Length: 184
Image 1 (cartoon, rainbow, N blue to C red):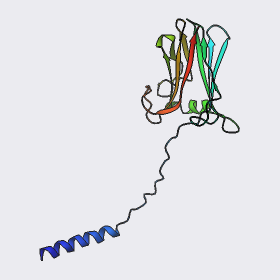
Image 2: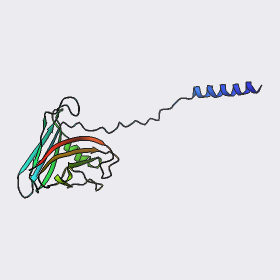
Image 3: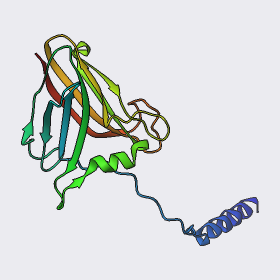
Image 4: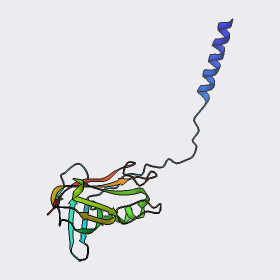
């Protein structure tokens, strides 16, 4: 008798669960905020006190992966010199060309440029712009070279929607490039 009662309760529970349906909440799921497609990165170094501009570019028509870049300049700067550094980002896979720089500026609270020289003594970068939360952006800034030498300048654009805290840690890379750097 006890066995029959347990079996009846289990059968009732199973039938109840079979008739329960998931109900649509009606809320649309927001797609993840995707990384930008960037096919061209241009660094513009303007020597302080002059109108002398040195421009260095990276171009990869199909973006990260796939075909090799068609252009990857070596950055060549004077020693012990201060420059204003500005960066330009384009998506040239579209017609007309999409200026990603404007998008980064509009969404500055979700983006952070990180400039990392190696060795560190080759160049010191100081941010020249901040977002609405007073965190650095890196679209413009100051670059001061050290003594002559060779190394690299890693240029990263960190995509940090909802997580930007002024550090490079949260988020993912929209750009991650290692330019050869010559200070001579």
